[in-house]
Length: 371
Image 1 (cartoon, rainbow, N blue to C red):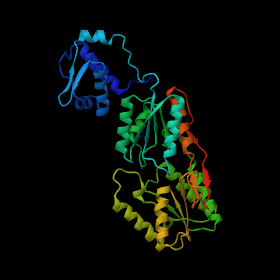
Image 2 (spheres, helix red, strand yellow):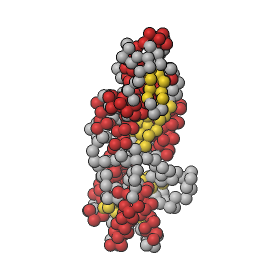
Image 3 (cartoon, rainbow, N blue to C red):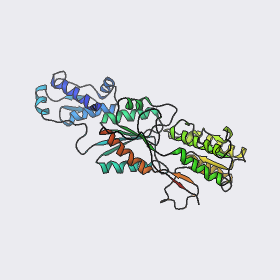
Image 4 (cartoon, one colour):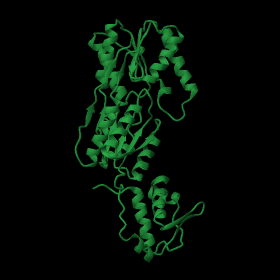
């Protein structure tokens, strides 16, 4: 059975205290900070509980001084008699959405797809961004649950380990659906792209063009499911073409392109120097496979600076939709972001209603050929 939202528990406890005389008329209630500590919740959650009491005129909130009980227990009994508190008011069903970040190259169409399907299904959407922070991800989960969302669609933070807050959702069988990045070994359904075969298609194009020394460019999080699948597809493509790759063809520490609150200019400049030096020191490398669009853009700028953009081939994942870019320069994978988002919403609603959904669903992608 689904548990009440945390803010509702605080509300009910305070209301019971007012009714039984623990908090007499005119007495001060615990502050947002005190309630947050006592219940181990965020300030947003405790604030919502107090605001509900204030909206019903049970308490008076005085900025800088606190919240004070307005009525005696007997009067409260009269006021609250017949009041129905629901998890979500009728017509105001809300789904929480947590992503690390989003932009034109990847994420914006995903969010649009989620929002569109929410409206179609009669739900509202509440969005939080984590900017690559595990702590922000945990806080977003707590805040959304405290608000009382029906379930959560989550794009996990990239990293080597799983967030305990996400694992807790699985253990509690809370309605949650992952997008883009799956959590191997954890029974949470995921909607995304077949990254392994998508990379192999890109590699086939490069091999057909005569390339043998192809550099794989990535950020450090090779254990993130999407990046891991792309890396495995890259390596297996070499084997299938009876060729050998090695660490000399990999750059897997481009950290400045990972979403983060405090991206440092120095870190980005260091990554640029790293790639530029690699290109100059390895003239035998004739093509580059970038794990995402941002890394590809950085690489292209360096190739152009070195006047090598016409000599070297660059392919990557994600990019601007062809509707906005009728003449793409580079070959790249376009994921079905909108459909990923829409499918995730449908699956989450099924989970909210107690229905089973597939553990893993791949949405078709397109290979956009450069002109």
